[in-house]
Length: 68
Image (tube, rainbow, N blue to C red; front, side, top):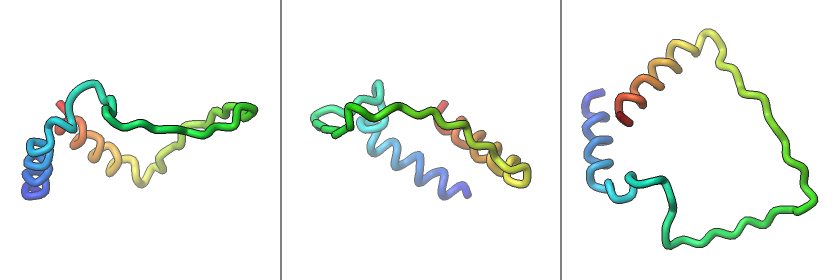
């Protein structure tokens, strides 16, 4: 597990110019074709089943440690 963490840290360090800033993608133009008559839709947040909740919380905690 520690090897995976170190590989991730090394990867982020090697490409820190990509993983920094305000999250804007520069020098790339994107065109989205959207139907102007399409109506927006709101979807309900998906719930996590109780058997998976502990594992999910564990993963989120790991990610939050990597981010901060």
